[in-house]
Length: 98
Image (spheres, rainbow, N blue to C red):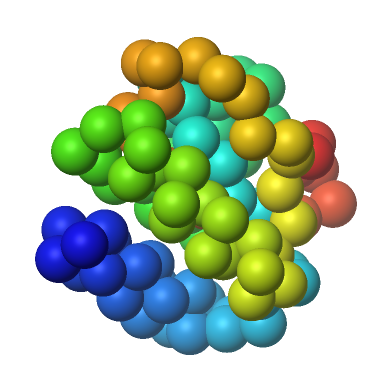
């Protein structure tokens, strides 16, 4: 749980730095977080607030995702893909796609 707690703390700190309200953020897990963020969600790499972290395994990534969804973040249904080692979050903007 230590690694997961460290990631949750880093993400919470990042969110508070850029806005803080959980409902203004989208969270997810992916095998390729940057493709998911920048291509699928339309996050601007240089001007939008976003964060991604590699987790020890897919179970940890999903646990972190569930934690932030329970806090109020938006997020999609948790899938079953085993290669989802990355957790990501971004602040929702008019140009981003959930």
